[in-house]
Length: 263
Ligand SMILES: [Zn+2]
Image (cartoon, rainbow, N blue to C red; front, side, top):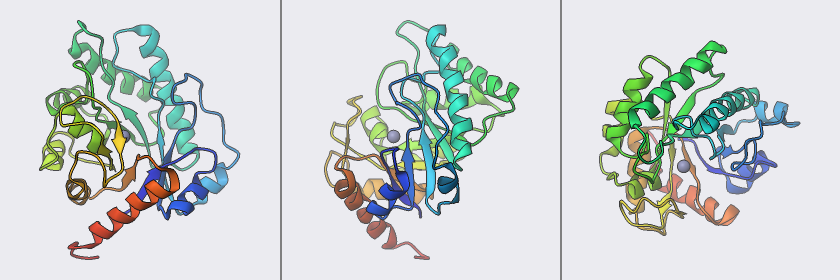
């Protein structure tokens, strides 16, 4: 089981070593900005690394919105990130499910997701798996609650779409972690990555504040159970830098080794 952390993008491989991580996730550009990613000087080294790489798309991306001034640049930025992430040998590009504005029809949001994949297909397709991530908040989100997620997957139909399950977002978003993996897989057929985070906030709060695994309001054994059931790599997006994340990774390795049949 590959376990890693979301790290600073300047030197992700050193960050992995410092945390004894065998996977890292990072941004290729300012997560709050619209700039296309620049080619990386360390691309050869990243491609050759034994550490698994994941790229998180900028937070500003919202391909679901009915606002064309956000939607059009969003899908372009997503496609550009997929190309740049493939260039460094990343295994997946994680992007939030997005939302429509209050009063807008969520059905149009799902169809905008379909159009995003159609747009990418016209350009030859995304260059690596795109993993849509569940989100914590909002009343008009495409991937907060599983009823919405099912409609999103219906809209995406035959496109090859991956899924990233964030345990903090699920808990804060109002989905119980117990048996969540089965309920998600019944919709998506797959979980490609787990974001293994605790939550500073209560169940259903709709707030997105990650905590270390032994802090927060989620029983950490539930996070372990999610990873085990998903059978997918896990990335912690938790506070505390090398020390905090290193401890979270060590905790997960320790718990996942206990009681796993072929450890
Ligand atoms: Zn996440």
